[in-house]
Length: 394
Ligand code: NAD
Ligand code: MG
Image 1 (cartoon, rainbow, N blue to C red):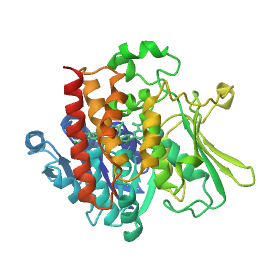
Image 2 (spheres, protein in one colour):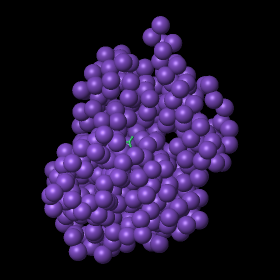
Image 3 (cartoon, rainbow, N blue to C red):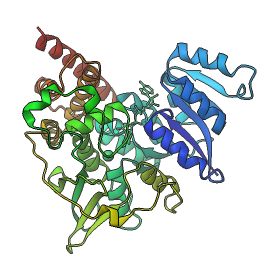
């Protein structure tokens, strides 16, 4: 029986994780669940999964949650508030595995704490890895933590790696990674119509049902940009050896090309419970609840090269990883600000890459060798991005 902590339990990945857990009560015990503000969903999850701890980051909502459980059978749950409590639950002795499913930079510290504490880290929160890079990978190595990718592409690549492969090591005899992308909702929209797209259209992904931030990232293809950087770190490979491939059917989730010419692919229905179940059962396998792939319904699979003019965010991510140092941290922070401003209808969809490019131009690729440097850069890039947005709207 393994103890599980889910950081970001109320989000899309958190909900899918609990769905998988409920199929295997003999293998996983939910020790801790965390949420930012959504105490309604959290309450229902507590009724079903009876955790020992919950964290509600928002202090006021945490108080409301405590009142909600008073006098009920849930009253024994220890309720904690604030960001520090996230690190507390992700390093508890009773916790063996941590699902890192908070969105954005907010997930860095508790995910890193889990890595330092030698936990099995199931990593969905790609922003945490992109912004902290080698620091995260070194923490995993030093503590002997296990790092298993949840992002469907990286999970697919991991599955295509040689037996016994450990994340962070160079993959023997693998010469290239083919990183697949659906192309998002605007794969074929005329480029000159993109500046008018609404939030509603941008978050309506054709193949995957996800949180709002990653849905916008998929529409700009910054998601693939972040995943390119994520792949460089997880698989110790140069960006030159990664080819992004648009595969609109989202049946193949990525491929590894070996020196003998063998190309291994992992396929399946586009449902995050597949990579979640893979990582949770690893090195074994168990049922994810996803229906079998109907290969006859797939019929056809297409593959195209991405157009960097249509998707400038992908170009910016290449530039950031090639520049190295703090540049991926800058890229990520600026993107988080720009996407948030877009979701709040304060900027246009096509402003997103403009803001990020201007922000990156304000920084040089200094070495990112400490957590302090990372956190300071993240803060500065956010401030710069807000300043750029202010100047753009004058
Ligand atoms: P989501 O928006 O649905 O959920 C986010 C979760 O994080 C929620 O539980 C929320 O309470 C919590 N959260 C948000 N802001 C927080 C803060 N400031 N402090 C603490 N907690 C906070 O997001 P999601 O789609 O589940 O994505 C989660 C992560 O997984 C992201 O990094 C995303 O890129 C990655 N991911 C998601 C998918 C997917 O299919 N949804 C696929 C691959 C990777
Ligand atoms: Mg992905």
